[in-house]
Length: 518
Image 1 (cartoon, one colour):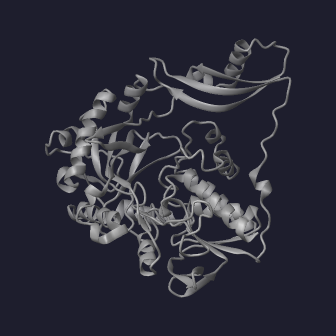
Image 2 (cartoon, one colour):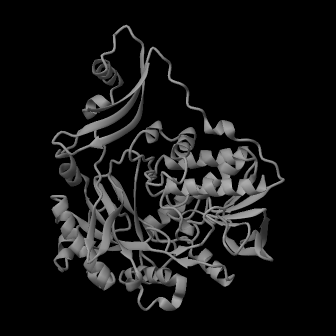
Image 3 (cartoon, rainbow, N blue to C red):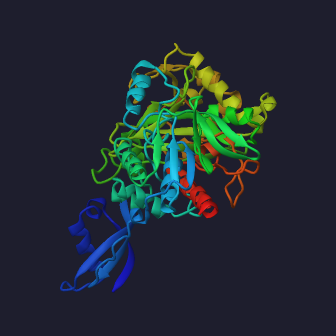
C-alpha cells in the first residue's frame, strides 16, 4: 500500500528518523509487523502558533519498496562536432542550457568573461578587504554567475516555466544536499555552491562541451539577418550554429554592444533601495517567539510588502543568518547584496528593502530610450560612491533615524566587511524613493512587531535586483525578433529572477534550439 499524508510535528521530532517513523506508525494505525518505508516530499516551517511546528508531506510505503529516482545524468550523451551552440555566460542559465544541449547531442561552447569558481575567490577577497573591484571577476561575474557567492537561494514561483524538480535533481546529482528537493525554501549556501558548480563544469566537459574563462565577448559576428558567432577579447572568433546570450543582469557592456550593433532592446521594470540588517536573534524572537531559538529550527526569515501612494515596496533576497557583501562590478560605484552560508549561522539577518522604479522616477532620463533605467541605476550607484572616501565602505543609517529624518551614529558592528559610515540616506536616494521606503518601514513595523527597532540599520545601495533592460525574443521560438539564431536568455535578458528561474530559462532556450537543429 502507498499513501500520502500531511502532518505537523515538533521540530526536534521532524529531524529524527526513528521518532518520525513511530509517529507515522501511530498516525496511520500501521501494524508493527508491517514493513514501513517513507519519503518526505515537502517540508516547511509553520511559526504561526506559539510553538513552531514543521509541516511535512510524507509518502508512505507499507510492505512495498519505494521506486528509485531516475538520474538526469543518465540522459546525457557524448556530443558530436556537427552542431555547435555558443553560450555567452557560465551562470545558471548558461550551464543549464549547456546540459540540456548535451542531452540532445549538441555541442555547447561556453564563454565567460570571469574566472573559474575557485579563482574568483581572490578577487572577492580584494573587493572585501582592499576595495579593489575587478570589472570581470567579482560577486556578479565569473563561473556560476551572481548566485554562486550570493547565497544560493533556490526558491522560485516559476512553476509554469519548466521542470523545477529536474533542475533541483541536477544540482543534487552534482553535490547539493537532497534537502533542496523537499524544503519549501531550498538553499545551498555560498560555501557549498562552488563545489556544485565545479561538478557541473566537469559534466559539461566530460560529455564533449567546451568552456573558456577570461573570455570577454567584445563583438558579435553578424551576417545578413543572423548571427554566426562572437569575437572574444577583441581577437578570437568562436563560430556556431546559434548563440545564447546569458550574461546576467549586470553586464552593461553587452547592453552597450547591442546598442552599437543596432540590435533591438527594451526598457524593463526593476527595483532599487537599500539593504536592512538586524540581529538574527531579534528576528528569531519575533518570528519564533524564542530567544535563543531551538537548535532544530533554521534561522528565521520574513517577507514584507507595503503600498505607498499606489507603489510597491517590498523585502527582497532575504538572507537569514547572512552577510552583506559588496556587489559593485566597476570602480566608482557602491552596490550591496546579501548572502549566507549553508548553516546560516551569522549573527545577522539582512534583506533588500526596495521599491519598483517606474517612468515617473525616470524623468530626465527619457533621452536614453530603452537605457533610461540603466543610466538612472548607474547614476545613483555613483552618487553613493562619491559620498564616501573612495573605498567600498557603504553609507548607513539606523532605520528609526531614517524614518524620523535624523542623522544617526551607526554601530560599527556589521556583517559588511568593507565597513559602513554614518550618512543621511535621504540625501543619497532619489527623493520619491526614500519617501516610499521611509513610509514602508513604518508599515513593516506594524505588520511585524519588533521589526521597527533601533537595532536595525540600513546600508546602501541595493540596486541590482534585476536587469533594467530586456532583450526581446519570440515567445515560442525564443529567438530575437530581428536576428536569426540569436537567443537572449536568463536574468540579463530580462526573463528570469534567480538561480532556478534562470536555469529553467536556459533549459527552455536549449530545447527550442534543439528542435531547430536536430
